[in-house]
Amino acid sequence: MSATSDARPRWHIRPASGWLNDPNGLARVDGRYHVFFQHHPTSVTHQAIHWGHASSTDLVRWREEPIALTPRPGRPDAHGCWTGCLVDDAGTPTIAYSAVADASGRADVVLARSDRTLREWHVDGHATVPMPEVDGVTAVRDPFVFVHRGVRWGVQGAGAVGGEPRLLLWRCDDLTRWEPRGTLVDLSDPVLAEVAPAEIWECPNLVPVGDDWVLVVSLWRTVDGRHALSGVRWVVGDLVPDGGGLRFVGARGGVLDEGPTFYAPQLLLDTASSRVLLWGWAWEHGRDEEQVARQGWAGVLTCPRELDVVDGAVVVRPAPELDALRGPELRPDADGRLTASSFELQAAGPGGLAVTGAGGDVELARWGAGARVLVDGSLVEVFEADGRTFTTRGYPVAGWRVRGDARVLELAP
Image: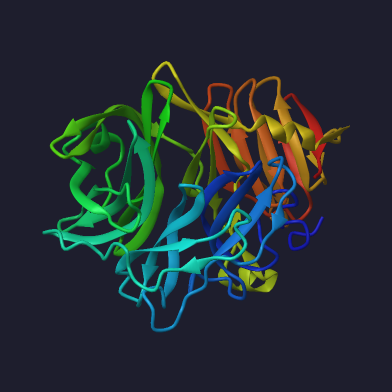
């Protein structure tokens, strides 16, 4: 096994080359799933961000599509087409995204429209939602659109002077006219204050699950003077009227993924299958800049996951369509070693997974009885029986080592 050749995932969403970060614009249109993502086709660093695009009919076999959005010199998105969402606007697929004009990071919302193939996009020439001039607010980005009781709303993540996060709210029945409606939620909510302290709540998502609403935010903090991506939190709660807008009231919250490399997920309310799907971004944890440059690519999206609420808490499991990847059973040697690059572990009891390198074994993950572990190249995803998840990266030189009693199946698209 070569750490270079076998590090690339085989069945996860990952363009042929270049940089990848946040999943964006999740949609199911005429039976085909579409996943867009932050991308640069020729660089392995975050710069001049485009929107890449992949599609699938079965969540297993993905087709790389043409790049959807590209920065335009002299326009609101000259510095990058950052995170956003896809909206079905009376049958017209419409992207609302953060357009960044310069290195300051100041972001306006811009719209782009396509026909139902989602292959050619026509971008508005102006900012639909200029960065709001709200007292104390220093950063606004990542629009997400949802519908509540027949009314369409837009929310963006924000940060304010003093390092306090908030989510700003707009009414947007007409996507070309967003009407500001104040703050959806801030740290005055005790549940958010407890589980999601941050300077900016990035990539907000808000979806109905049964009788509940689930809010997901990614935490942007400053650690030792540097910006840090500090995990993702879920909060189960409700939406209540608040003047001419809404207020989110949290009831219970927690960590969406406990691993070190999971960030900026986006959720898809898949009405055709009556479920919520999500993808997240897993960055190159454990490789230096020289190694990443040598391999020519950086970042991968997680597998499609189903999100549900059970007894008031969020649980996450692999989408059942992934069972179609299963191949023959693999048998580790007497020391628990495997040289396969893509496999599933079905744990009968507690166990762990280590990568094998020149300096010996390095343990990456542990799990309890009933866990499922999906390994694809350098991406490791652990799904515990109770609905918790753990995402990490590993780059073995001489294979993997499995500890504990587990059935092992090869995975292949």
